[in-house]
Amino acid sequence: MKAVTAWAGIAAVLLFCATVMAQPYQPQTTPPPDFSKTLIHTRDLGHRTYMLEGEGGNIVVAVGDDGVIMVDDEYAPLHDKIKAAIAAITPQPIRYLVLTHFHRDHTGGNEGFARDGATIVAQESVTERLKAGTHSGVTGNVVPPAPDIALPKQTYAGYLTLQIAGRSAQLTHIANAHTDGDTAVWFPDANVLATGDIVTFGRYPNIDYLYGGSIDGMISGVDAVLGMAKDDTKIVPGHGSLGTRAMIQDYRAMLVSLRERVGDLMRKGMTEDEVVAAHPTADYDAKLHVSAQGAGNFVRVVYRSLKH
Image (cartoon, rainbow, N blue to C red; front, side):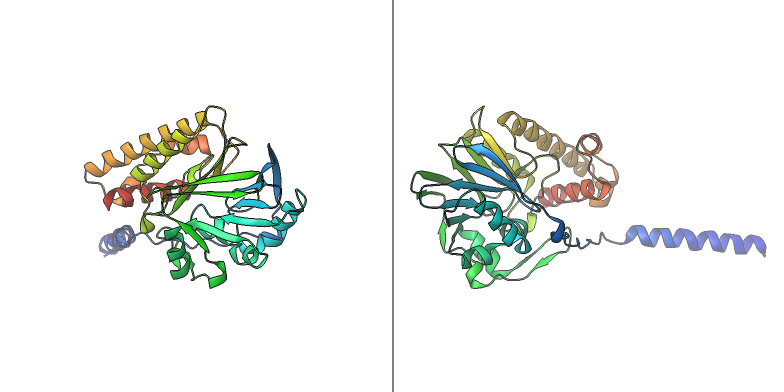
């Protein structure tokens, strides 16, 4: 009787484990940051151009004779802190607010800066994404539709040049890389290039496969950025520290390597969970100090973009 009971117990454990392993991956909602603790750090890039770092995507501020061109605006609760940081640089008003894509960590402050008088500018598909609302296939986060005042009032398809007195910004649409509405912003007089989330340093990029992004598109997008940058160009990535063209080349090599690793495992018939469990990013995880969840999420988006 004891033997039967023991085997019954073992069978129950095995059944439980099999049931757990059979469960599909459930995305985890990411909690919001504590914005009360966020500090905005300003870095002078020369030629009246600045990089602002807070919580969310990096910001670029280009000061002209009669106003400011601003790239991205982080999260909504940081509007006042960002506005104060810009006021410490210049008394000039923000004329244009350029969005590199639609994600809320780059566009959350739209409403506040629009009310301040800025004209929001973006690639045309960004308006559609903000207006409809979006969600993340990895984290489960849902972003509701943006109010009309927070939507771009000036859009473009492929290329656009914005001008204020004494300054210009060249906008280039890079299709289907991080999203379907990515914009790279070049400030020729300052030799500064803002890449949005096509380039991120010190972490794996997010690839928004639900809204036009893919690993192959990311690699092509990085190639486009490399074509725009000079050896001495100051690169403001979507996230991470100020970079160089050489750093983008290293970043591209990482993307290509990991794309091939995941692709090889897929060709062997592995499922998404099996590919994640194989840890194809292990060496880069150690270099970037990425958590298991962060590495797993990156592998999942690469897998899903290749699967599409």
